[in-house]
Image 1 (tube, rainbow, N blue to C red):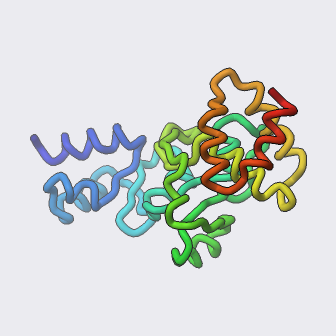
Image 2: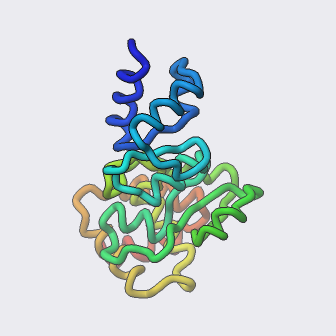
Length: 197
């Protein structure tokens, strides 16, 4: 397959983005990719990341492709799951303890750290509003996270998320209680299930 065809397909599949590393993983040379970027007048938005001029610049997706180990959580995940109607001013991200997140904090992100074994608990892939795939926590993990941080959260966001979750026909109470047990929040989460179910 011709280089241009491969790269055109990549740009289409990635909503106007190209990562140099992805192209190299398909056997293309750095030179061929950079020549393609020049011909298509693509903009460099991060080291090794290029975007077409008509593509929507997606802040969450850009953070994700530059930081493969982050997970969008708390208010950001609630908003993507439609458990909150308030878009956070800054992306909220969870990383494992010991991860150097200084560059993320400097970019304005809000960072939470968790034990290594909890990082993948409830992990899923979802689409941003621009249609790009990112790693976030499922609804049940989001509920556990906000119950854990209730005293440090906006009470309106908390209440909206809790009532939205418990009125959602797709909720999974069994999974919620499994996560709560793992995260040592069983009693606190049970209080909400008893009142709202």
